[in-house]
Amino acid sequence: MKGEGKNPAADAVFIAPLVPEDVERVSALAAGIWRTHYPGIISATQIEYMLAQRYDPRVMREELQRDDVWWDKLLAGNEIIGFSSYFLSGPCEMKLDKLYVRQDRQRRGYGGMLVEHACAVARERGCSWLVLAVNRNNANAISAYGKYGFKIRGAVVKDIGGGFVMDDYIMEKRLQPPMNADERR
Image (cartoon, rainbow, N blue to C red; front, top):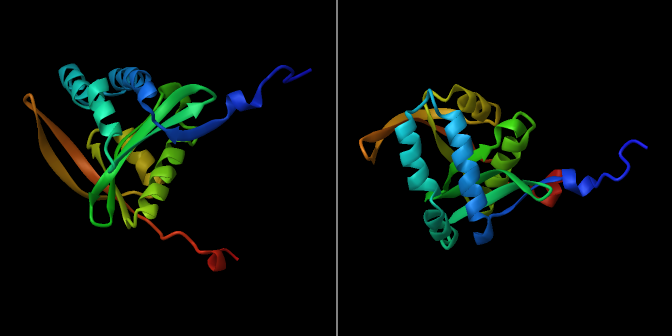
């Protein structure tokens, strides 16, 4: 019979908090995604520099210990297929710092799931805005964030050391407060 022996839970996609035991897997996933996605946008040398700066397991573990930074993993069954990280960046504002989905799992709404989860956490913490920085030459990501309701707020060139800069658009999404029970009726 069709579907016999298949475990539907193995196909379930869901978001869970990243835990220290996941760090090595997410670090490796980030390296694979960056080395595939970013050539042509930034140099190979800058890719390696930024991977070391942002995804070294030691750096990730330190962030997991903080109260103002959240890391999530996107799971398909037991496999991590994406991740996100966000932090409080100012009064009433949360910054979506990282959001990546494995290339073979893109265009299935999983990035949107991660964005909506970050929006929910931001709302819970009293934030009115979710902001992010995206490389000005990353047309696919800019388009995707536009579909998720982000608008370009401005642009910034930021020195990140090592002779490298991040040349980014700052995008923002206005967060609607959660509906109360009376409004849902």
